[in-house]
Structure formats: C-alpha cells, structure tokens
Length: 393
Image 1 (cartoon, rainbow, N blue to C red):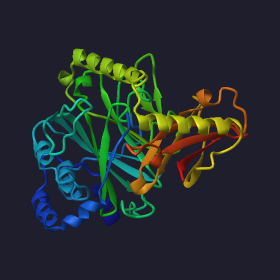
Image 2: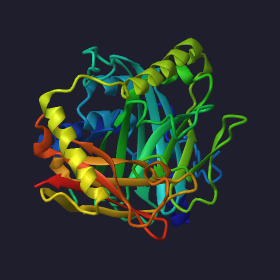
Image 3: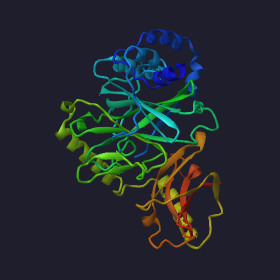
Image 4: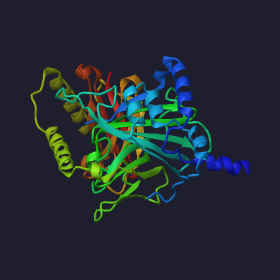
C-alpha cells in the first residue's frame, strides 16, 4: 500500500497555486554558497499526443508531490534571475507539470512564461538592440530507476544529451526549432534531477497555430524522433523510436497568436539566412583563415593532411546516416568551445565514395588561424560517416 501511494505521489501534478514549501525552499536556497552557481551550465545555440503520458491528479496530495520538483520560479531563482522569478509567479505564467516516460527517463514540462523585460539577463542582437521580448520554458529530466543525473561538473555530464525545443504546428520541425530560432538554455542538477530553462525569442505569436515542446535524445533535431504530417501540420511522436522523444502540447491561449507578426517573424528568419550567404568585405585575418582552409581542402583532395593540422581525438565519432541522408554530431572541448549540428551527407559526398573526406565547417575567434577549428567528415564503406575536428598546431 505504501509503495502504491509513493508511486502515485511521485507522478502527481502540482496545483495551480504555488505550494507552501515555496517559502521554506527560498530560505534554504538563499543560504547556499554563491560558489554553487559555477555548477550551472549556460548554453546558446549557434546562427517538433503523448500516449504514454503518466500525469496524475489526486487532489490535496499533489501539494506533497510538488516538493519533488523545483517550480519554474525556483529554477529562475537558482539562476539568480529575480525578474524571471516574478514572471513565473505572475498570472501570465503557464504551469503545466505534465510528465512522460520514455527509454528510461522521466520528462516533465513544468511551465512556461513570455513577455517583455521579464529577465535580468537580456542580450543584444547584431545591431545592438536589446532582445527584450522573450519566451522561457522549464523542464525537468530524471531517470526512472532512481539513479541521479550527473552533475554539470561530472565527467559523465553530457554523455546522454537532450534537445529541448519548441515546435510549431504547420512548420517543419527540422527547419524551425530552438537552434534556428536563436535560442539557448541554462541547465543545472539538483538532488539528482536535471533542470533546463529554455530561453529564446517570444513565439506566442504562433499560439493560434499550436505550439509543442519536445524533449528528445541528442544535441540537435533528430528527424526520426517525430513525425510531421504535411497535410495537417500536426507533429506527433514516432512510436517506433527507441530513445527519448517526449512531446507536450503547450496550453497557450489562441488569442495570443498574431498571424501578421508570425509572418513577419518567418520572413525575417528567411532574410537572415539568405544574408549569411551574401559576400562581405574580408579583413586580413579572414583572408588568412580562408587561405589556410583552401590549403587544407587541397591536401585533402590529394589524400594528405596539412602538417600544421592536428586531429582532436576526443571529437572523433562515427555517425549514423538517416533516411533523409542526414547525420547528427556533437562535441565538447570544455573551455575551448563546443559544437553540434546535422551533416547533409548527400551534399558533402554526392558520389558517396568510401574513404572520401570533406570539410563540413570551421570556426575561430578574432585571433584567426591561431585558434582555428576545422570540422571534417569521412564517408565510410558501411554508409556511416566519421566526424572529427582538426586544429592548428
């Protein structure tokens, strides 16, 4: 009987009002050392019908179960964002507390909030304008077997990554997700539960179309995780997917939608993407980088690697190619940076010749060639590809 009660309480929903435990937790968290903030990961992404939903409502007992998870407001407090704490406590916040379980993980969408100037940490765009109209969503991830999620300072952190993103009904999820819409997130682990706070441009303008929040395995959108119906625009879980692919309907009021603003948003995205392809005047350091990359590519075609290029072994990974000829990769070099994305294999290897090697991208700071990182891909005989990053010695 006790085990049954524990199980029910474990999955119970939080009520619409904040529990009394809020004050107690506030006092405890304010007393913690500020050094704990160093354990919180903050990430920005560079320039999608849950049959197994396990949410239960059991009246007053839900208040007891609420203590299991931090509330969205408490998550904002952990990240020292007082304005966002107030926003999550306000009447415009949407508290969801829906839980789904897949592939050994329990995923809970805690809530979301959006608006202007509701965060202490607003950034500026390329034109120097403050991005003050933001959307935030809070998610909790834990293991179903009770073992703790690795802390952000542990070596095991990131070994089982998750891609948390909103998806919009009617829009292709592989094209419109948090990565392409200029989003990022902050993350930390508390009592073995991983909490993520998604931060991106306000998407309430799509509320009349319908918005989902997806949590899937990996560091980028996986086309096998969800199914997009081009006729209806509906996005659903792929029931045959053997990893995490939770998908929640975000209950936003349809009247928040603004079709005109949504059209302008999409048009702006398209213009920005096209702008990236436009030629620009190159500075001396850009020219040096371009020359180094061209030499690197030339030697690749001749079956050699530049003498001053060194492979970073920790980035080497064999990637499976899906039905759309896309392969997902990710790597983390700690303080030296990280990267993730999707490789368009048909474009890199139109002839699909085993052993052929291509450059898929590169990155560097204002130092130019000095800290240049080059992403490479090799097409393998079995149809997979091997990804690796090279750096200048």
